[in-house]
Length: 329
Image (cartoon, rainbow, N blue to C red):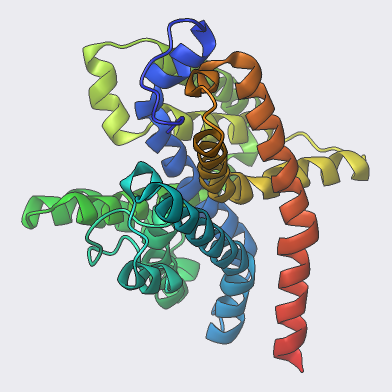
């Protein structure tokens, strides 16, 4: 969503992003795949996972920023209700949906409308999948890729074939698919040590195909995109291409890690930042056509990146250390 603009022909770049906004969901799928890849790489050497440590890792990593943005959106939307008699974008700001959001349950099928920091829906759906990952981890540790592929087939292909599904259940099934696809990608990368050059050629080919599919529409493309979105293909291809390259510079690695760590922050903070700008524009009667200005777009992205880095360094990591210290004591 870009300030409720659907097209903007005065700027070709922004117009392109708006017309391609349906691909936004592909980046949610990409995040699910990356999360699966990250979780299996973190726990691969374990045969079993202790619930306490697993829950603590999850809570301290994801919950502080979720709670912060929930309160932030509550405050901004309260100002919108006070001054304009309604919330921006029509999202609910009531107690019932606040409770759902508190427990990461905003998109479990109990919601009536979109509410508060609506982009958290991707994390809400991921929570049950992470629970399933914990419960069945001993099987995954023993069977590895066979189990991950089984989960993909069972949840994404067999269940919809047997049972009638709605949009909420389809979202859950898609999350299972891409999370365990990320796990499968990890196992595949672990297999191909004897075929490094050939696999890297496939990586280059995959990158070319994913970039092409993001920009050109054809009938077969829509069928393929239902199976594996181009963003996930791009992620897989980059992993295949880069897995044999290592960087010795600790500063470089730290910068890359910082950039990767901001992905969650960027996603959760982009909506309250939009709400804030809309509130300011409405309060001071500023022309909203400015939202379509390319300079404003760059300004918004710069601000978003800046506060996301600050959030990681000054809020998320300190919050994680604080909770870990509290739990240990």
